[in-house]
Each structure stands twice: as structure tokens, then as C-alpha cells.
Length: 235
Image (cartoon, rainbow, N blue to C red; front, side):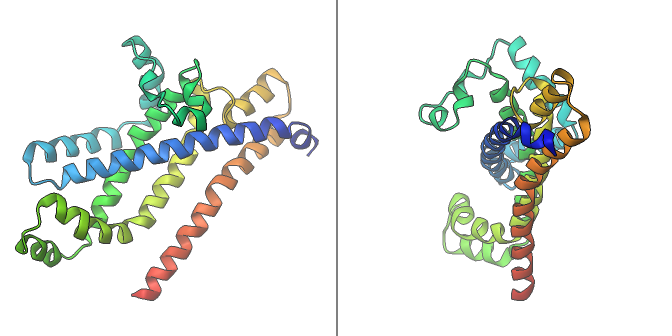
């Protein structure tokens, strides 16, 4: 326990770096995933093909490969992800504006990878909406976009929120890979530094890292259980 107490500041700093990465990646994955889901159900064949190809490729590609490409492939192509230095956003999430770009690369990898699973969760929610409602919306003259915005997606969220939560929990756990691809100071990188550089025993360090991830995932899991129980009662 002394290892945890003596290095509490290191664990706390790693927790907040991981928390920032997870918040940004979850937001990016939700936005991109909804766009991909809309493409998959679009009446335009090329968009459906593009959305389906995105999901097929990313869903079947190991996250390690996606991380590797983001951390080493993008710099080789001449990108340092500077476009993510969005004014205001880098003031809130300071790692987005630092000269060490691995945080931004990890954000890209986690968002792009998780978006494929978000798209499938949203599409399953859309499939749960009665086709009669979409037909009625078209009958009163709503366009495809209006139909999605006002009729289909608001109802699809109810059916998709539990699988979406499971996807986000998986993403939080997957963020542990970021430290091994250059992100400095997150939970996994901090643990690696404490054991390999600091020479501290592995077991208490890994207990500290595990506690950090449990603090991130358990509240989300409890919230999903509560939502699921409410939906069961409603049925």
C-alpha cells in the first residue's frame, strides 16, 4: 500500500490524462459513428457502400494496428495531427495543444476504431424502430434527413444506449494501449515508468492502475444497468 500512497500524485496525474483521452475519444467516436450509421442506412448506394466498408475494415482490424498506423504511419505521411489544435478545445484539454503529438494520434486511433462499433450500435437501434413510423414520415412529405432527425434517431437512441455504453466501456479499457504507443503520462505509461524506470514492484503498481480504470468504468456500467432495468420495467 505504501507504493500507492507514496506515488499517489503519479497515479492521479495518469488518471486525469487517461480521463481526457477517453472523453475526447468517446466524443469523436460518437460523432463519427453516427455519421457512418447514417451512411449505412442512406438511400444513396455509394454512401451505403462507403459506410459498410468502413465498418467491415475497422471492426475486423486489431486496435494495435490502428494505433500503430496513427502513431507511426501518420508522421511518415507528413502529418502531426495539428488540425486537432482547435482553439478553445486545446485550452480545456491541454494535451491537444502540446508539441508531443502522440496524445492526438491516440485520440484519432481510438475515435476511428470505436466509431465502427458505435455505428453498429446506432444501426441496431434504428432497426428497432417500427418501419411504419418511417413510412408515415415519408407519407407526410419529410425528407430522408428530416425523417432521421425528427422520427428515427430520437427513438433509435433508446434502443442503442445500452450497447453504446458497452462500446464506450470497451474503449476506456482499450485506451490502456495508448501509453505503449508514445502517450506520456497516462495510467499505463505511468505504471510502466514506475516499474521499469523506478524499479517499484509490479503488483501494487498494477493495482493502482486497475483502480484508476475501475473508477472510469464502474460508474458507467452501473448507469447502464439502471437504464436497462428502467427499459425492462417500461416493457
